[in-house]
Length: 167
Image (tube, rainbow, N blue to C red; front, top):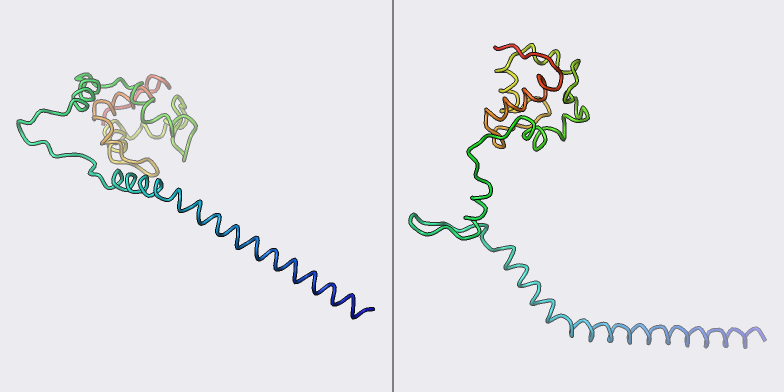
């Protein structure tokens, strides 16, 4: 009886394994057919994406050639002869770190934190902002010296009431 049960089990086991192999092969064939049908559209998208990624960032404009219309609009919107106010510069550039004492940056309006720094004078403060100091990155490329002075004046003198001595 045991031998007969073993042979039935082996026959059933081989049948189940055979069916699983057959279903697996069938699924592979279906997936291959479906993938090849959609591959052409994907190839075109991949080529278009690659061309867009490899396209030059800008173009050289020779003297005398007209500026592209998109650049004319952007230039007109961005151009301003007036320097930004100290509050505008602070909100645009400085507030991310100086709002919450990020990486030991003195918070706007914190007299204790600014007290020791203002003793160094204007030139040192402006130089530290312009060239970077400690964890603070250089800001010379994002603001003029006049705007930097206005931002320092806003953060220290206007918000704390402390006076920065001339150096």
